[in-house]
Amino acid sequence: MSAPLELALFALTALSALIWLILIFFRGGFWRDGPYISEHIPAPLDWPRIVAVIPARNEAETIGETISSLSSQDYPGAFSIVLVDDQSNDATQEHARAAASKDRRLAVVSGQPLPAGWSGKMWAVAQGIAAAEREAPDAKYILLTDADIVHAPSVLRGLVAKAEQGNLALVSHMVMLRCASFWERLLIPAFIFFFKKLYPFRWINDPTNPTAGAAGGLMLVRRDALARAGGIDRIRHEIIDDCALARTLKPEGPIWLGLTKASHSLRRYEHMSDIWNMVTRTAFIQLKQSLWLLAGTVLGMAIIYLVPPVTVVIGLFTDSLHIALVASVVWLAMIVSYVPTLRLYERPVWWGLLLPLAGFLYTCMTVASAYRTLAGAGPQWKDRHYGAQDDGRGDETGRGTGHETGSAHRG
Image (cartoon, rainbow, N blue to C red; front, side):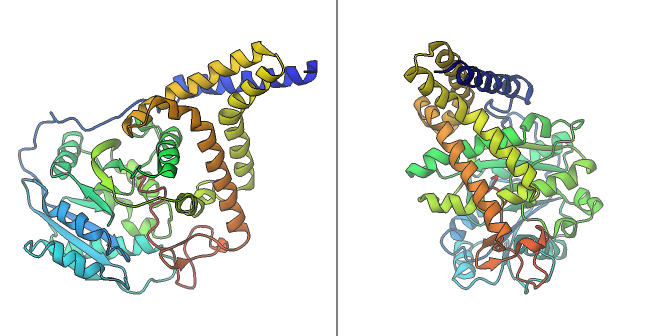
């Protein structure tokens, strides 16, 4: 290997090592397991009334299990459920009613046509909250959850206890995503790892830190904080709605985001194309549709995740063992930081060797998302589309977006 090339490889490896040093020690401990809601939080003296709002569009396959799990909550206080059927053309309503046939706490709202300037999910949520205010004006919290998530009986009780203990404006759980197929095993734990790196939970949970984030699959929102913030109308156009809601609520009071093993998503991502479509519909919007941010992201992902394994291979084949050794240490640090997430999803440690591959695939998805947007296709979900010209603010023609959860229930 020529001296200039060897120097360049060493410089790239050193830069990757420096970035990983910063990430591991100065990025809010994002890679650590947790946080989780403690089982030992004192119960409030009075359990407040709660209303769950579930937006659903063509969710006949999963809505029954979701409703059943909510009906089975062991919550000591008053609790009711509002399902917003967002103009489904399947048996979503029928399956929901069948699941709650003996539970009169379920109310089903037939969604109205999507107005201009609204995303599909936010419009459904807004209708659900309006119905909740009519049915239970004394409810202190709104539980926002998706139509494909199943909850253990103690979930609501834990969320409310956490919110009451800290007087929180928002409590959110990143639910367990399905991790059964090869592509799910390769990409889902990596997705969680990348999200925690982008939104360190410790920073989100620090009232003095401006970082805000949430997981759209399960969010407990305090009604008075939401009203002070301007209501759901404030984020009516958002596609990555969970983090937008967190940014809106954090000035109104502390927020908290953690992990849970008690709620899990039924959404299947059996094929590469399923995850590809999920990511590409929002990735470029996450980058504010900026080509500069896209270029920086691609470069950063290459240096962080690809340089170490590539340099190990080059170093071994060119007898530059000192470079291969340094790159191996960086790759090992990457794997070690990934281990808590692998354990969460019950994956063996050796899967950490594949994190660079996952990083490469997610980078390709981000580039594809930019291409789709710049080509005028824009995001699409649940048979709804909107174009790049809308800048993530909804389609002026009224088509809007579907039930985008930002990042796969972000869970």
